[in-house]
Image 1 (tube, rainbow, N blue to C red):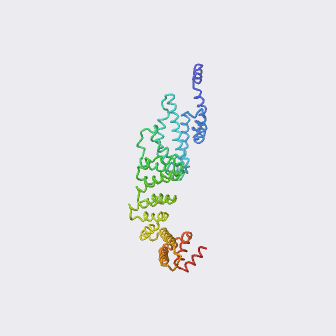
Image 2 (image 1 turned 120 degrees about the vertical axis):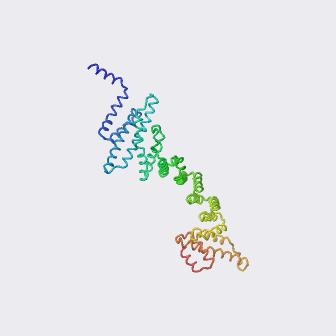
Image 3 (image 1 turned 45 degrees about the horizontal axis):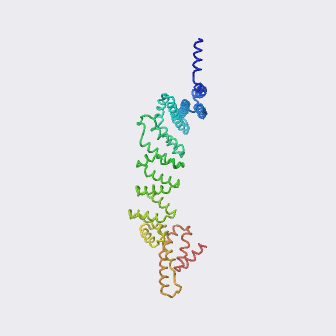
Length: 402
């Protein structure tokens, strides 16, 4: 009997102090796990994760995995019994299972490099990773629908990256290429919507090579570049979108609006003109040439293009405005001679009135469409009515402008 006691004592004394210490620290966690108290056990694990004595021990993270599995089983049982389930807790427990398995794998690798031991947890953890693979993807989709984009990124990061890790093994039969690409696009969109712009490009190689998502991704990349103030890259993506998807006006509209906003009228015109050459029947591209022409002072050209488009797109109020404006500018540019009896005065006066007459229907068309936009049509119609001696209309406009 004494020999047995002495032997036991010898074994205890010969055991590493760290092992004895960890057994003591882990005992409350194991007790909680036996009592099916997953959340309480997980709290204890997290406390030890910041303790330098335990933070590199794979066993601690295995206990964290087991705690999350208890939480998962509890919520899953509610689903099975058609009781109300805490969906967030359900998915977060699955995330926790993955998280602690990967932490355990990382710590075990560190020990393998130091002590040249065989992995203890990998085989069992590998099976669990495979079992919950579809669930981790479902969690990403759930949080995406709930517009919790940070969580979406976290879940889909596991879903997309785990299959490339050593612990995954060779279970390619579990991977759906369609689901992977869809998840990659959700990841990119979530990164954009959550302001994680550096992550948006992460899965370009997957999504840009899929025709189902290519157009949306190009648009997403253009928006991201705009948000990061990389206007050169933004223009590149938008031009790529125009080239590949000429039937979708959104790419053209965005880059055109950008050029107009920053007063790059020559670029706006050149882009619209080049596209109207390729697509001569496009009212969009032809109409887009008018505003930059006006801004560049090419009023004759603006009128010519505008009048041509208005034959097809008769209700385009903006075109009516720009054409009317061009006629008014040309009328105002005519300087009448001082002598009202001179032949040149009559010639110039008639020319001026002709421009006002041509401007009139366009400006009134715009006024009818936007009656409250007085700042745009008010002064020009005032000048037109005055120049054409339209007394009643002139009196009415004076009242409006007062």
